[in-house]
Length: 164
Image 1 (cartoon, rainbow, N blue to C red):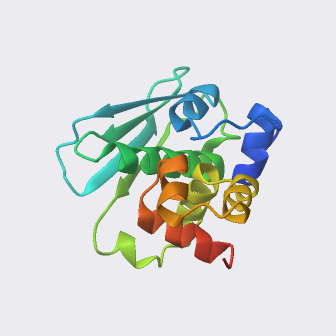
Image 2 (cartoon, rainbow, N blue to C red):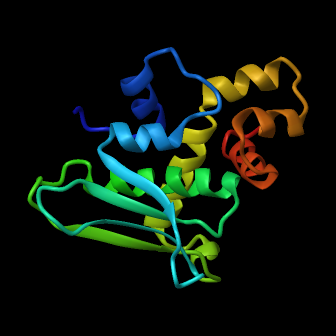
């Protein structure tokens, strides 16, 4: 696969101009070769774990099932962001992994890798072109969030990213 740099690159590579809303992040994970699933994670401060512990098996992502459906979508998109940043060009025989925490420190947006994964996730869930179409048609804020199946706060952050 071509090296992907942005969420738009990924969507273009997978779907061309045929983007369907809401973005199916579970399908995208699968197309990238990531086995993603919801599951119980003992540490309630952990949102997700992505790992590859056996060669030649694929990466696995476990998303904390205690999270709401909408939050799990964001977490999967975030995990995809980490995968693109760190592992997309990894050798097939490399063992790797990352634990994604949701605590006071992670929410401070000081870790550049976390900031990049968050930006990637929001861009993946709410592609700029699709967001601008709805915005331009005068959709209400709540209706746009519903179209993308994201939280109101995620939409507000994405609009701020786009200076809207």
